[in-house]
Image (cartoon, rainbow, N blue to C red; front, side, top):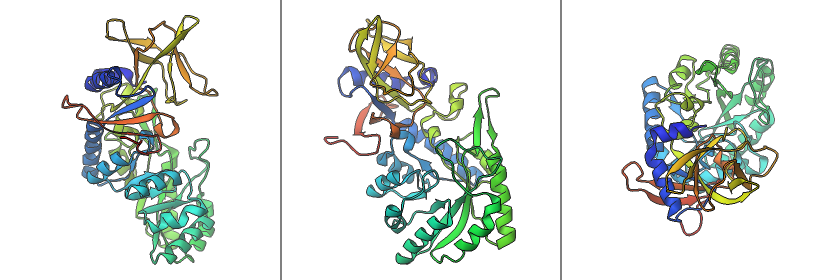
Length: 388
């Protein structure tokens, strides 16, 4: 999906990843992250957010919940990590990373509430009065008040399968009356997802109806209850290009994820401010019935994995097609219709969610200064592997 853009805009990463594999310094099924380029992208987004008066939480799930990068982003001035589920929150707490937003896509389970509330995240999203009560009780035990947000949905809202949740404007009256009796929480914000989507036909980012539902809920809460809504969190496709859209839509916060690695959908078609900052590395394992197979583990069904660079006999890299892989199967191997020599390097760049893969996450600094150095190899859950 992003391979042509990567070849055109970050040749240094392509060359560095190829050499690391040829030198047997990394294994197949590895994502090599160009840390220098990722941080350059992050600075550009942060600069635009500062100009527009929008605050940013950063997402790490796309890059394997990596705590090293999280600490670097925090040092750049980002307002903490988006822990999309409680397992990501556990990883970030283990490494002392600031939690910005917890609970939006996945609620905090009862057994984890005390630990996460004690860690004092900036905001926790809740779907129900019951969860707000659990958080309030934990906050009172910790002698603090926890800011919470509500996830708003409506008949107009766009919701992905597996993420069905939230409260409608018609449910707010009863819900807020209950929350007001909980002394350990303060309702401070609203959020929804996705608030923006990229339209491939028009090649532009469009507001979704979710924003209309958020705006209606804010107006209702402030007028009916006199509760000031301080945070209007509008995630999805947060980037240099969309930060002004967040501001113009009444948003106060964005949550860049794919933009940090230059792999938002519009990176396919134009030279956006962000540049691709990772490449997937594999190698040819074997040939079977006149087709060659390379090691898998990093496949993501929504990744649009269609092409790869495969090493030719003379050591150059040539673009080759990759066969479509059925989402119902395990990607032990991925297929190219062409016959290739065993052991040859395979490089690819497609849309990914590294935290759902079996891949190694290899952090490399110095690529842009022509002095690449591996600084750590991590699992997709952000755990540094022994010996690294």
